[in-house]
Image (cartoon, rainbow, N blue to C red; front, side, top):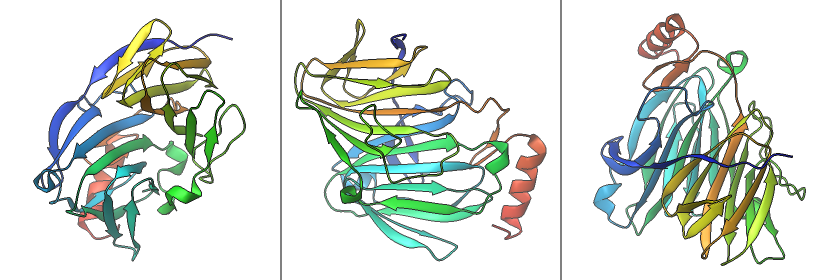
Length: 275
């Protein structure tokens, strides 16, 4: 057993996306594969409607998955396949874009909008699958309570204690946990060696080995197979891990494929109305 340590600490960069939504980008500023299979991680947190009310009007995706997890607020989403719904506080939308989808995400202009969007790559064998959603309300996601007073909300994958998410059939077999810890508490989680793992601290301060990780900081985790996470203060953090795909990546905006020829085809399919 080898303990996982922090490889790098990252602070987000302020960007505006969609029609002007203010957010902080932690993964995706540089188009490299340093976080493979993670392509993008955005964090948004504002009580000012002007920061987010313009939302994300209709836009395409192909070749990867988008995961939206809300801590506060609500977002109405709609796509060109006739699917429509609302994501509210504590809910998750796991959208597998596959061969192509056009959708919009429009926040409600009331109160605070607080949450994440993650882009997760698909292997070549699944890039052209039919689009699908796995949408779970907060009440459908299990919460594991620990003796230390901490809790793990299991959004994807399974904890060491066996609590499993209802989300299934994801190619990279990810873990996605919302972890809340009181002061001086700790949890342990095994993560396979060939996974990329990251931890985002929403609030408070946690310790991984000798490294402190403070609020609104992303820790890229290094080699090892067991994470020992301890809280310095009352804390909330998001643990994300997924199997590396080990395939070439070619990206152009909302299209993520393996070759430039596939990107050109994606652009042609979109322009020709074949999504």
